[in-house]
Length: 57
Image (tube, rainbow, N blue to C red; front, side):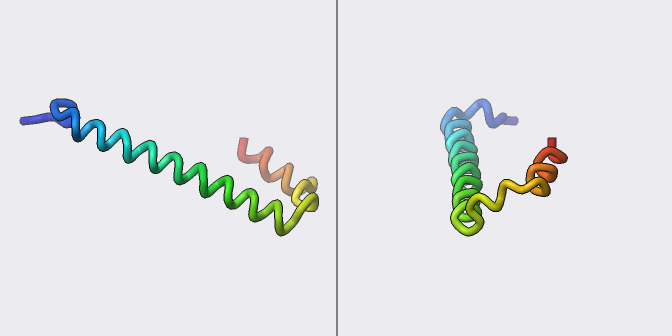
């Protein structure tokens, strides 16, 4: 049986795909944050939002 690690081209493609996926995810999060900032401005920094973010951690 052959393993994925036996084929460097498959491993490189998988690594490249994972990087694109992470970059796309980061881009979407930044875009969503900018959209929220544009629409809500300084109102997004309310006690409710800060409490919701704190609950995530």
